[in-house]
Every structure is written in structure tokens, then in C-alpha cells.
Image (tube, rainbow, N blue to C red; front, side, top):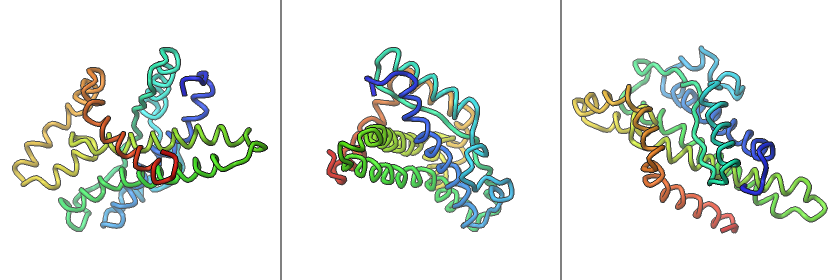
Amino acid sequence: MQNLNVIQTVAIVALPILFAITLHEMAHGWMAERLGDRTARMMGRITLNPLKHIDPVGTVAVPLVLVLMSVLTHAPLFLFGWAKPVPINARNLHNPRRDMAWVALAGPGANLIMAVLWLIVLRVAVGMGPALAWAAVPLQYMGVAGVTINVLLMVLNLVPLPPLDGGRVMTSVLPPRAAMAFSRIEPYGIVILILLLVTGVLWYLIGPVMNFFNHALFTIAGLG
């Protein structure tokens, strides 16, 4: 997207980001309800209404700043953001330790499903004729952005670091004493994540996994 200006880039990535974050959080609440906890339902968080999930800083300001930096510096676009966490009461789950892992995995799972759906949008857009180029070109950009953003959020959230989803899964599978010790990292998790991001270590860790999923999805769709 390096040949797009700021307004075009924001227009292309806004919808994929909004869907990616909204459905990711909704999936957590939906899975929790399936497993016995209705807290998210009672607080109105199992909804496609993005206003219920948007965090002004994590959903709007941070992604917008990263988009602006990418356009102005011509650096590769790396998006990072978050929504308001969906409230989960683990005590209401049928099997709290096991079920929290499934609740955590629901978010990245939703991102994988959305990546496939955006891939379908991209495949349809590529098949449009020249007469529909006015719609096909923006849809192609948006499809690529949708796949990339959702793969990024899926892989990033599976990093085993609290409070990311991968950290929740790790806490669920570790023995109780080890899980308790591991969970003490959570208050410092975001600081650690930001340090990994600014030092480039985060991309070193997740880049190969992202590239694998992107390549596999585009290849399966005949676009690789």
C-alpha cells in the first residue's frame, strides 16, 4: 500500500481493523457463554456493534498513528491495537482451567475465519472485469489488508505472554503452581510486548509464522 496516500490507506484498512477487533472480542464472549459464563452477554458485549468494543486509544489512536507513520516514512505497515477486554468470570465456567483456554483461543480463531472471508472477497475482486475496476481495485486492496491484519492479530495474540490470548492458554495448560507463577507476569505484559515491538524482537518471533499463514492462504486461493 506504499503507493496510496494517507486518506486512501485509512479508508482501505479501517473496515478490516474494525471487524478484526470487534469479532475477536465478541468471539471471547460467545465462547464463554457456550461454556457457562453469561457475564459478557449481560453486559451487552456479545454484539457486532463496534461501539461496544472500541477502545479510543487501542482501536483508533494507535492504529491510526501506525498507518500515518507507515505512509509518511514508506516503511512496511505494521498494525497493532486492542479493544476493550470482554469481561469473563472464570468461576462461572464449567471447568475454569480448561474452558479459559477455549475462551482465549476463540479470539484468534475468529481472526482466522475472517482472514479466509477476506480472502474470498479478494478472489472475487480479482475476477471482476475491467468495467468494474472502480470497485475491484479498492476491494483487492481491502482484501489483502483484511487477510494480513487478521493473520497478524491471530499470530500476535497467540504469543504466550499474559495478557495476550496465548498467555491465557499457557496459564490453563501449566500445572497449577507454575500457572500461578506465570500469571504474575501479567501486570508487566503490555510493557514487555511494547519493548519487544520497538526492539524488533517481536517481528523476529512472529514474522515467520505470519509469512507461513499468509503464503498458505494466498496459495490455497490461487493468488500466491
